[in-house]
Image 1 (spheres, one colour):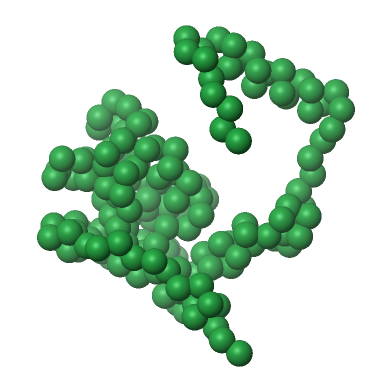
Image 2 (cartoon, helix red, strand yellow):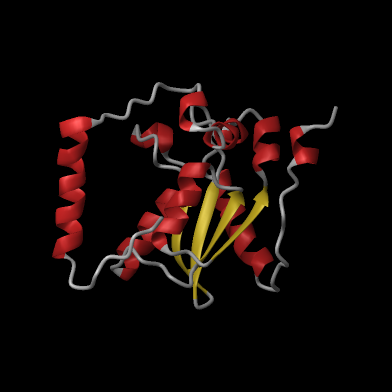
Length: 179
């Protein structure tokens, strides 16, 4: 029997000359998360044009915020410094492969490149559930086990779809379906 890691190898793009220095900064941020009660040793930096524009270490415990992962903190920092939520062309460097939530935040921000040191398998071997989340999200909705999912039909769904459609109608340019 083969391991999940052997069955699902992670593809890696080639590194660039400056990647190591920025990854070392992300790892330095991860060290800031060490200490009693934190147990979340992750760090990240956002780079645009060769300059660090956002930094973050995991703040979940101290902020009482389950979304305050290092990558999200770094994206928020970059957005506030630059005055925009769109970070197109930026690179996010992370001490560890981002969890699904943080990866999606990178997509929402328009991050063009992601570079990380440790991967989801390294995180799993050290007690972090990221690999479990990746596996769970790969399942169809009805087969997921970590929480109950309920999708309403009828008038409740119609009301919610109506709000989405109203937003699309208000946009200055036609909204293209993303199917």
